[in-house]
Each structure stands twice: as structure tokens, then as C-alpha cells.
Image (tube, rainbow, N blue to C red):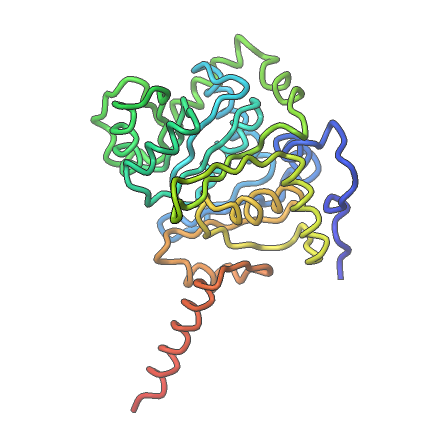
Length: 309
């Protein structure tokens, strides 16, 4: 059996590896051609290596910088588990900003509360559904200015100011880098362990949602200690299916993947999770009680159907 990777040790953080973007940069160097993340699209798994992960996030960061994204800015992240949204999380962190994931099924009023409470000037979203909600939010917002979307379907005719595709944003990043070649590396170097890495909001079932501010130090230590306890290695395969707005997904699909170097796999949709689970055959799987109940129900129904005369 392969030994647990040294990167999962709970040793003190050094300045070269004390934030998630710095750790991803390290993975891009030491695990350059290893798969970091997969996404199932139109029935086919698309793979991205750690070097591609870092480069895609770097260009998104530079694109955000070209729009005026600065240290301390907050960016709302809304959508299903997608590589592009995880890259946007890292991009914001690399510039000293703070990603604020929002549940993708939130109604417009719920999104508005979090956007205003977090004072988010930027949002990176998955598709037209989220764009429509946030365009509505922006008409009343004192903060929200820029919306970036990944999936262009249904959005070709939109001409709203401050609205751009992720492809357009990365083009802006390439142009920005030409005139500011040292910007990304300088901002990356300024990052520190005690910077806020993410703000995760509670569900709001007992009152207004509350934002929990979590530092890089907190999350890196948590991810490393949990990885050591579970004996996780860089060759694990994990299904990334829990909502990105839930802190559990940030720990299991983002933080642990980065500190250990294992691969995460994004299902095609919520409806295909069980089928995608069988295809991936994850070596490590985390699920809250409702997920295990759902799996048990599915199995029991199939058993009953098989036993029926």
C-alpha cells in the first residue's frame, strides 16, 4: 500500500504553501500531469490536470483584476459543482478576495440578502437561470456590478452592462497580463494564512443567514488533519456532488483535494449522481444522512422490483 502523501501532514504552514492558491501552484509543479478534476458533460468525462487547473484559475483571476477586482473584494459563486466555479474560487483567493458561494436553488430574494450582506461587487455563475436572478438583484443592489457566466446557452441576446462570459473574461485576463505581467504573482505572494479564504452562509432556517468567515489556516489545517486521520492519498477519486455553498463541500471537494492532490469528479447533474457514482467508483465518499437514506431507498426499491413475480 502506498504511503500517505507528506503534503497531508499537519506541520506548520510556510510562506510558500500557506494559502490554497499557493498550494495549487505547488500541485501544478509537482503533479503537473495528474488529473485534478473531471466533469461529465453530454455523457463524456472531461479531465483537467493540476497544471490546467492552476492556469485556468490564473487567467480568471487576471480577468477579474482587469475589471477592478481588488484585495478584500467579495465574489458570489452560484451554480452546480463545476470545474469553472472551483477555478473562480481559487482565482478570487489568489487576488486576496473572498468567494461567497450561494445555494444554486435560492430564490432571488435569498440571493439578494447574501449579496448585500457580503457586499459582493462580483458574481460568477453557471448559467442563464442564475444570471436572470442576479440581474434582478443588481437592479436593487448597492454593491453588485459585474456578472460572469459559464454556460452561454440562452444568453446570446443579452446585452446588459457588466455582463460577460467566462470565455470573454479569460480573454480580458490574457490582455491584462500583457500590460501587467507581474500582477498575478505579486498578489499571490501577498496572500497569508490568516486571510479569509471563504465566507459560507448558514441556511437561514432559524433566522437570517449568517456568514461564517474561514481562514486559509483554519481550512488547510482541518483538511490536512482529516486527511491524515482517513489515510487519504493523492490517488483517491472523490465525487463532488454536495452544494458548493455548504462548508462540507469546500472541505471535501476543494480543501482536501488541494492539500492531498486527489481528483474530484463533478456529476453531469443532480439527477445523474447515482449513475455517475457507479462510473467513478470513488475510493472516498462523504454523505450526510439524507444522502445515505436516498441511496438505501433506491437500493430497496430495486430489490423489491427484482423480487416481484
